[in-house]
Length: 216
Length: 216
Image (cartoon, rainbow over all chains, first blue to last red; front, top):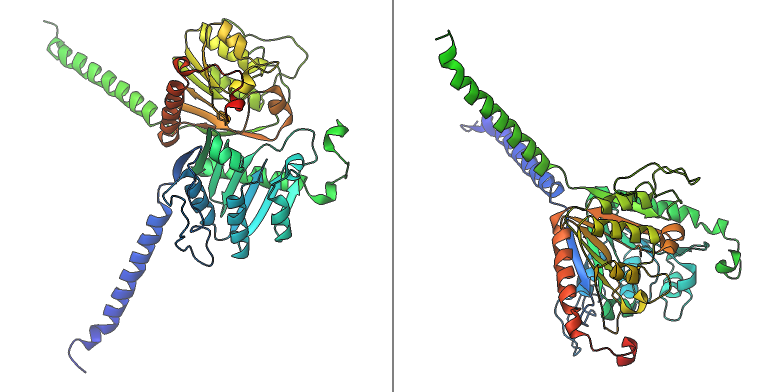
């Protein structure tokens, strides 16, 4: 035997242990990454979002709109980071860009579920019909009050919530806020609220009155 | 001299050092208290809030309404914790209970400032006129979009924000959320947003068009 050969298994074991330790360290570091805390204020300047919404991957766009950052672009990027699930609980949803983003996620295999308000989903310009046609699960209220939430949950760990209805009017003209939140103290109650509403709005419970407000 | 008397200054010094150490510990503990993170979901069951709104101190109320906890009662308690300042940035404000809470704080000497939407502040039932009559500073937009925020900042350190307009309809009938937040990453941008809007809506800039929507 060559000199030192008997030490080889120990060196392998040492190397493997080192690699494992490093992997665990990196994983621990990733887990301990500070939770994302971000605020977006609107109105948002109109910027080109076509590049962000390109398929299969974002691509440059030659249009004349500004291509810089904007609150809407940041909101789209947070949404488009979804890999597994997206819960949407939205009073009004008519923004074409946000609608395209949700359809894109659906096509990528993300499980999308949308809860919305029955009165607003039928308005002209609503994205809800298109999302349903695309095969996305939608449930709505049948209550006298409004389903007035405006939140999204990405991969069950990032909450996006605030005053912003998902409409072009709100994005471009109104004073609005959106919080991006990863703290479990907020994400978990919102997830539970979503699941509670999702079950309550199960179509098996619909009574098909022509106008829910008349039931008052 | 009595025996042991020469040790007395050392005992005093020791006692004083102990007290100082304890005071610093308590102060450090207070400062390090985890930031409050709380979520309230609405609709809120109707409960008696008269006790909370009693002057000069909360007092029991004999009315027949339930006297338990409710999301509205918790929202009121957070607001009523203000000691120095209250910034309000509210699209719609017609809830009598929330109006009473704000007037109470004003009478207690808390510096209250309210920014609101010009279209909604004139609606029947709005609290804005009463608050102005009580001497609270109010500023409103003159923009084509809505001032659609619904947030409050207590003593510049607690943010109260969400989907909830401060109306009885929203509190009692709608699905709504309110976040109570003390993390500086959220509180500071909202404070800056408030100050920005407060300056932009300075009455010196008003142009007194009869209807802001006609300026479009």
